[in-house]
Length: 170
Image (cartoon, rainbow, N blue to C red; front, side):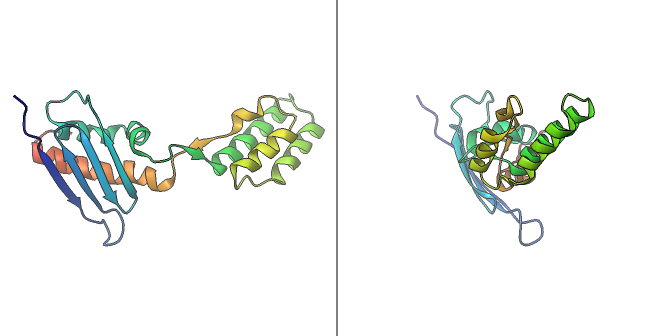
């Protein structure tokens, strides 16, 4: 004898009449769908370890990266700012401890500053020119800002609604 599928719909209003709204559909089989101003997301968990799927979804507020691994459409993407920061820190650190000569550090800094890495392929052009060992490890990725806002701003608000509905403490 199979149980009837329960479906829940939640509407989270915007914070400032502009940003942060979302409409969520959940069902008792583990289906999650969201239409929001941060993008649209969907996934189905087949094993969520809770009697009520809403409890599981409320817990996602504590795990934004886990949630994004499941629902973010393109996953992590090349992060220009983090990559630039990491290369700068490396060159400065290795110059400071004298692992790099002044001339080597200056040459590498010049290669780097001539390249803004606005696209991932520009990083690989730099990679082909640099003499820094293991330079490929400097490529940094992250989730796009809209995905991060969805997971860190909107999902906690949904979680609060779910906890209140289910009368569960945070």
